[in-house]
Length: 140
Image 1 (tube, one colour):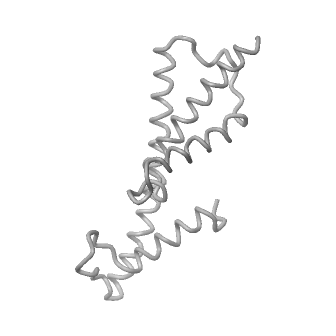
Image 2: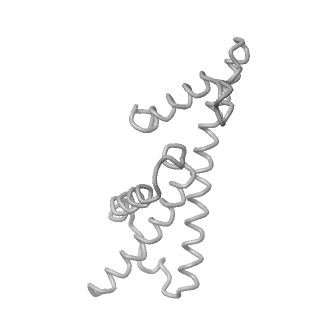
């Protein structure tokens, strides 16, 4: 394997990792919100893909040369990223619903009338705490 072949394999690997990370970023609760600009999401995806590419060992024989097979492989990576992001979204929604149920049981289940989404205070606090745990509090 010469140097150009190695670079092509690394680029294919980077592209596949980038597809998965970008799809994950669309649905993950912290980065999936509309408050974070798309340029920031893409930049974080590129940075994560650059960090993860040297850590992944994929033999060159497993990466296809045909564009159709590579496209199908990229589609599979997108699906895996979306599924992972959706599972994480469901976990955070579960935490938020648990907080809403606690508020309903205590009699505080009424959301402020000027809010777009009717989420109780404790539900919002539980979700923020869960996001803090995942983002840097040491849960993962």
